[in-house]
Every structure is written in C-alpha cells, then in structure tokens.
Length: 194
Image 1 (cartoon, rainbow, N blue to C red):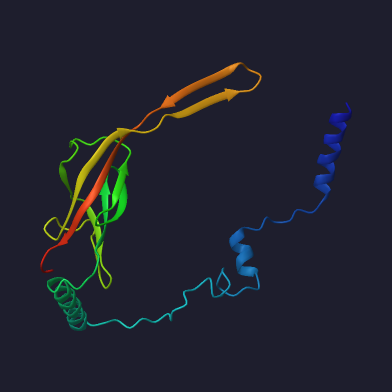
Image 2 (image 1 turned 90 degrees about the vertical axis):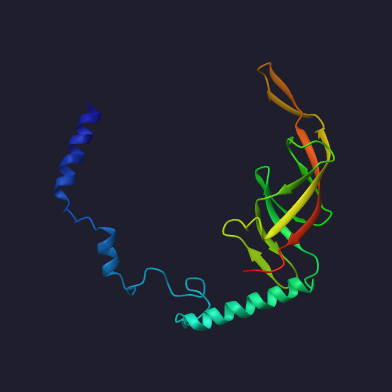
C-alpha cells in the first residue's frame, strides 16, 4: 500500500509542476553565445599553413616533373645514388631491406636452400636523394630485388599454457613454427625512368 500511495503522490506532484519544453541540441547551439563555429579556433583546430594555396599551372607542373625525372635519371646512369633500400611485401608482411640483409620469415616457402628468388611486390625504392613510390606497387621492369634462401628450420618450442586457479584446469600447448631465413642479394634499378 505504501508503494502505491507514493506513486500516486508522485503523479499528483508532477502534475502541479509547470512543464518546461525539452530543448534539442540544435536549439541549444543556436541560442549559445558561441559564434557559428562549434570548435574554437586554436592552433590545433586548423592547419599551420595558410588557408589559400596557390594553384600551379599544368605547364609549370610538367616542367617541374621533367626536371625531377632528368635529375633522377642522371643519378641512376652515373651510379651516384649510394646504397639503395626497398620496401617489399613478402609472406604477408612488409619488409624494409637493403643489400646483404637477413630476413627471418615465419613460414616455409616453396624454394629449397640455396635457390635464388625474386621479390616482385616492391612498394618503394629509395636512395639518399630520391625515393620511388609505387601506387601501390612499382613495375617489375623498374626495380629488381633478389634474395637467396639460406636456411629452412623450425622455431624453438613456445609453450602456451592456460590455467584456472582452484578449478583443476590446465591446458598446455607447445607451438613450433616453420621458419625460413633469406639473404637479400641485390636491389637493382632500371637504367632510366619514364
């Protein structure tokens, strides 16, 4: 009975109180003292460069592109680029490699020990002064990354243990993964860019 009296009392009291209209967030926003922007203008809310960017004409863009390509071609022909590096996609991962690097891959590949393979998925090739970026890959005729299979082995045993205290629950799993070691022999660029 006390519960029903309390609810009846609440219903009668709530009828006596004046009802206020519910304000929607859009209505609150328009009535606020903030100007039209929701985010305050700080150094973090807008970029540090100026809002207006000057558009470059197509002719000027072509001339800049030709200058860059001729500079890179000259460096490639004179072999004046230093040590090359490449980012290759192999065995589900991306690897940044240079000459004579060793790569440990967590699975076996089809090639036998001592065989040379070519890594065809090259995402990027770079040197000291230039970088060639593929969209998403560089052409097979543009860059050539070769590697040698050094060793095919298995990882050391990893123990995966599940244990619940006070439940007599223990599960032990020993994981041994196949591994392949590759040595990067060379990274070669085509004589000229197009």
